[in-house]
Amino acid sequence: MTHATFTILLGGDLIVTERLRKAVSASRFIAADSGIRHATALGVEPELWVGDFDSTDAELARQWPGVKQQTYPPAKTETDGEIATSEAIDRGATRLVFAGALGGERSDHALQHLIHAMSLAERGFDILLTSGEEEAIPLLSGARTLDLPEGSLFSVVGFSGLEGLDIIGARYPLDNFSLPFGSSRTVSNVAEGPVEIHLRSGRAMILARPYDFSGA
Image 1 (cartoon, rainbow, N blue to C red):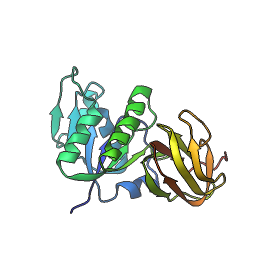
Image 2: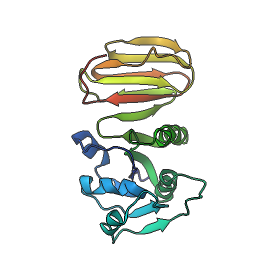
Image 3: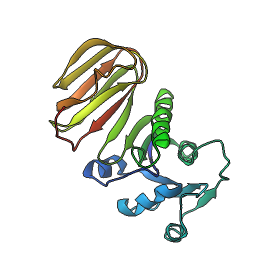
């Protein structure tokens, strides 16, 4: 089976870091509306550009005359990012990187990206959301290992109550912990090197700041 990585360029903030470049290496790219502005910083040309183009000005459009466009009406039932994701899946994506998914002017879009990512993880896709400086990874039942620098910040934010939560390799470890929905107990932890997280049941989002060494 081919394991294809697609990077979806979204309209949120993006800072090009070494971790970001590594995450999107050997990736194919699809841009969602104004997210194509990140293509220049990454030095890539997307194979497809989708959206209603309500946030793309004429100058930006002129920079990418060779990129195939698919235009949708503003009164559509999906966001541009969701349309781009569907196109990537149709092309065989098994791993999806959402670049520009965190931050930006629209908190509703950022929140929807997190929820959409969780639904994709439940369908078996390997998911990463990133701004370059911050990363988000869905956590379902099972185990995750985070390759984080020693001293960097991370949080586990429950999307439900969590059962059987282990956090290993962190300043504040947990063993078989039950986290009530809405609790902030797992916000602001510090990696002591690679962090291993186990979860017996529930849904959560891991939010990491690999370049932030300000402490918890």
